Image (cartoon, protein in one colour):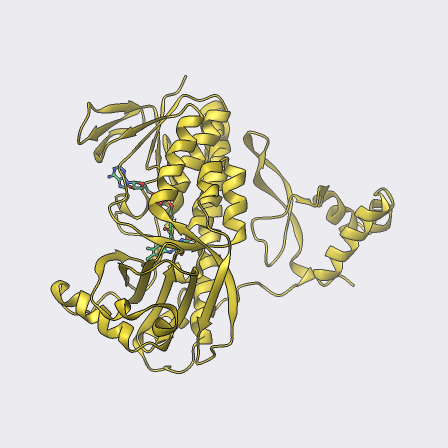
Length: 428
Ligand code: FAD
């Protein structure tokens, strides 16, 4: 049986490992611990993704939704919610989920991966090298990066942490003339503040804690959420947060998932969601590459196209959010991000003339398979099923002038679903 090694025990690596284990593959995970403490905010759909991936202990780490203040474009009215994730706890719970599923997790730093498509030799810092027939690269932003197919403006996030008295949890985000800041306070009094700016032009490293404290002192939101301790210099960790699409998401015996394949701007708030998305599709892709070599290219094409599609969706979401801030149109930080990656709308408007049937890869059970799907301007990868109804036969019938017969064959609720969808696509 093929020996599969996953590099990195973040949400993406763990999601793939659990999926492969369910398919009966012997799989090992090798990972070191993240070198800094962080808190991240996630939405309900991340929690759904964790549940779907079988990461139950990790899911249990998410705090109950707490209020999030949004101060953007001078508008301070907006309040929504997010669940705060204490990353060290979350990362530890992921490993417990893996071990509980019977997956070996080796704690080591990967120094180098040598090899060819016939096999990989993984050099570790504290153990004998590992051999793998198939490799899953899930080391997040630390995965080796030989350039990128697409890179957003170079961006750096400075994360500060300090301790205050326990209290109500909450978070906030605010735009600044040269960037934006996200801040959170956990119920146990741990406080986090993160400023995201252009990577160039920051003060030297030893001056950064004072610089950050000064920036906090200028913020009314900081005074609202935190006590006086927020005005003192705090422990600091710098992280790159440039949006990057890696140039290739797979090779004949390897696959990239999560941030190692595509890392999004943290403003989109979707990092963990996108990591889980690529991880949830990966087991079927790998299974197809290993069991059906005749479909290996199709499976790789499926993975690549989905990764690229998701990347562009999140990049455009970020762009549109940046564009909402209009107070500093001349500032390079805002100019660059308002226009990247392109000017295409987030969702293409409905245009029935573009609706057509095409053959495309989909996940069918445990494999990738090519089937007839319906392609629209907004869904270029195609729709196979609409709430369980296969759509291609209906569009084929419609193009032949036989829509009524096709609809008549459906039960009433399904017929209404299809009619509603056709109307939403501009069919009259
Ligand atoms: P990671 O979670 O990065 O996991 C990679 C794993 O590989 C880690 O365990 C690491 O220790 C290990 N590893 C790395 N190198 C090696 C090595 N050489 N050897 C062995 N192991 C190694 N997402 C959100 O959803 N909400 C947020 O609020 C949010 N805020 C963010 C703020 C910033 C500043 C940044 C940069 C990102 C943020 N993200 C956020 C994104 C989120 O952190 C990532 O998208 C997500 O963790 C990616 O998951 P992953 O499994 O691909 O990689």
